[in-house]
Length: 402
Image (cartoon, rainbow, N blue to C red; front, side):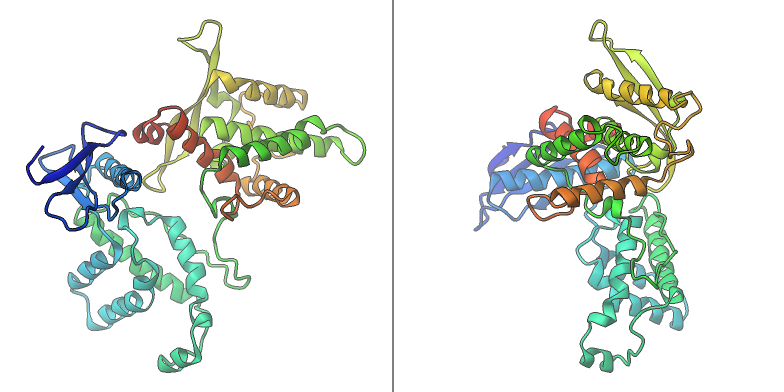
């Protein structure tokens, strides 16, 4: 151990590469993280701004995860925050005076406020969607004094204005890509629903936090009662209602145990994309190997194929659902796994809305911290959390599987 370290602890998630430590010379005994770079020489180091070992390890894991993502994309990991990087972009501009003035105005007034403290590698299409909603209410929230100071009489931006600001952000991202700090420029939507005020934020992923075991158990219990045990034709339940409840139940189980996103990844899936194969380490046991043909990349909006797996312990959910579909005259290789009522491609948002409606009715639409429970948080986010905490999966393992 070098003489200037007071303490040094290997990080359990990758003890060969990562460690937290304190310095003898420091007045405050805050922890620092040190992560060895995979390529080249040297380490990434950063203050964790805490004297607590538990908090330090948690913050170190976040830095490690970001570094792993950057290295996977072939980038040199640097903790690049939005504001200093945008100012670097501004300083590199050789455009005309009018264009540069416009870039600076958008940055000073809006981007520097909204994206402050955010790393450029973390900005995705979802963040832009949320920015649009925030931006639409900016001048409505401002004081009369501020509106008068900037001669702001129009309180809601037009689609043209928002499209222009989108162009500014894309221009900056293309610059960051050219200097090697950003792998790909994410897709930023430009369909702005200005009349309803709803923006373009999908309810599916408004909150994406894994649920506690207690919360998940309560929801699963209610779903089982409503979708399976009490799902009998009669007393207001038609065959159509019965099938809809079954689909919701097995949709949740499938996404939860395979980590397939409960979005277009599932609505595009055909039965031919699923293969039941023997489990090599369990005699007489099988698992499902799933080809996700419309898979979303973790690092960009580009869609490509990936493989997901449904473990043998939960394979019964898939088998039960196929039996239901076969009884409906579907379940053939070219049929959708989770179709609409007519057999066509379903809309994931409709299934998500149905879940939300029932959760609200049951008083389970918010978790213990007041966060909104969504289809995404119930299935994929919770599934990922369990694998990390209970199954001994590393961050890299989960990233590869998901």
